[in-house]
Length: 157
Image (cartoon, rainbow, N blue to C red; front, top):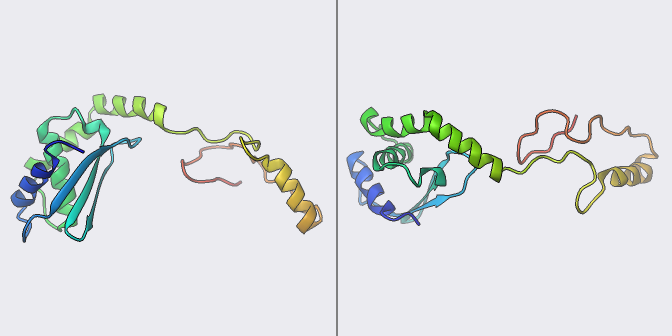
């Protein structure tokens, strides 16, 4: 949990002119591999996650991030005065350097071989090809890591 996160969001809720009673805000830092902000509403509560890159950020940066999120959810316009500190922080070289350093430790590298920890994809391909296709399928070109792979996606050539 982020100490003071609820009151920070309640202040921004009021400053943005959101209508109604402020919901209960649950704010936490989360170890994303980039500078990510998420928000979701569930009944009477709003759940917010800030990238842990923002843990040491000044209050004005956190307020700017909160204003951006709340403006999107409640369809309001956040003033430049509120959002500029966050945007400057996000674009700074220092933040980019920290993000890249953190990403190296958190992002898993894509597989470079069809032989994994639990399965041999070459062997599985050969078995399925023989059983269902009478050996007529050609092995995919570059079945390992050929080119750029987006984390969380499988690339076939």
